[in-house]
Amino acid sequence: MRRLEDFADADLRVFDRPPLPPPEAIRDVYLIGICGKGMGALAELLAEAGYTVRGSDEAAYPPMSTRLAAAGIPIHEGYDPAHLDPTPDLVVVGNACVPTHPEAAAARERGLTQASLPEALAHLFLSRRQPAVVAGTHGKTTTTGLLTHVLREADLDPGFLVGGVIVGEERTAGTGTGPVFCVEGDEYDAAYFDKRPKMILYRPHRAIVTSLEFDHADIYADWAEYKRAFHAFAALPPPDGLLVLNGEDAEVRKLAKRTWARVRLYGQEGKEPNGLSFDVAARDLTPVPGGQTFALVVDGEAVADVRLPMGGRYNALNALAVAAVALDAGATPAQVAAGLTTFRGMKRRQEVVHDGSVLVVDDFAHHPTAVDATIRGVRERWPGRRVVAVFEPRSNSSRRAAFEAPYAEALTAADAVFLSTPPLRHNDDPADFLDADRVARSIAEAGTPASAYPSADALLPDLLADLRVDDLALVMSNGSFDGLVGKLTAALGA
Image (cartoon, rainbow, N blue to C red; front, side, top):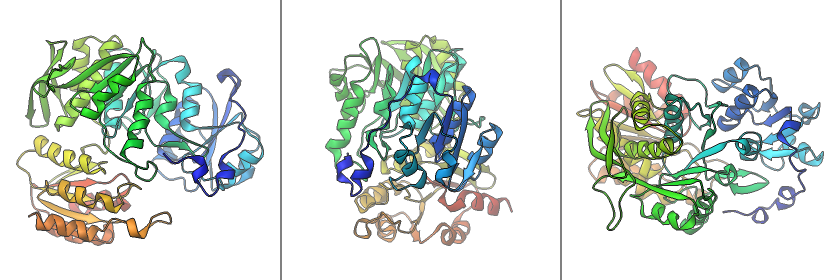
């Protein structure tokens, strides 16, 4: 992972930050970059807990701006050091801030008390609770949302902060009253002055690792360095805590040797590695229209029948991880099964956004493995439909040339593919930039029709011309895709 001294502006990143005062001494909190997904969620959490909250962002726009307004949180549009007056008790510096950011620089130069998002969350909320932290390359958001829902259904009322919205709700965070606090444990760095992975700062009492596969090539030098971050994470739960591991993933299983905590392995019955058994398993896993069914098996005994309203074997594995933590936190098998069955999913995770002559499904998938799993998952959930994959490689990591071949292989699982590549950013290396045309040619050579376009708007007319009655248009991006989903559904509705 990149060290502070690796940056050209390292002298601005290393400075003496005042120590955080006790939580009870903090009342007024200012957030720089308050409309970011995680920062907005923290702002809502702070407001619910009774703190005075304010902040700023370059462009305050819905849905976050309306959510914050509904919570009574004032937002300065644009950045100005004067916004830091009167002096807050704590300044939370968003991950997007660089050392020369006008407000971040002013906070540093004035010696104000500062923290990153994960530091603030840990200090003000997690230190008094039992954090249940969900980490891993894939499935963090869905698993955290599902765990929150299951614990609620079991009347355990957890606190939560998740990087997505549970369908049927508009919040991504809540204080809760129970002992457990559910957190999505991101492996990305914390702030310009703290390059530690966010998940390391969350002090897990119970932890889940869903999967391990190289990602975030913009901050991790290689696979070995990426794994070391999870080695450190696995060592954090205390001896009376719990580490829940995907037993089907060989790299994840190795983390059992990195912890003093109790370990529970999960997986599908029949997929056990030689000489191992799963503590929590799915028996008779069967895809059905609208989801999948299985018997929940704990320590070799079937304890409940589950109908999970999500497609994809990966979601069944996520459900098993949730079951392991929920049972350890005091839920009964019947309560776990009921919670799994009533979960409505996460927005932008196999989310149906238009159900007409063409079914439009929006998904956050952006890593090649997630793209492949999502395509196969929607095939199971909606069998018989032609799957038209519409994909934008938007993240810093996914835009790299190293992912061209994996994306081509993953996208051939669709029946037709439409690719869009956003323009170069200031920090992109043109020599290492993914070539969407080359990816499309590889897909077409493998037998799946594929085309690449310079933008979402350029793609839309050909996509509309290609779609047929009963098709499934699967739109995948970890960003806004320049409003493509809304434009597509509006055109189909018309």
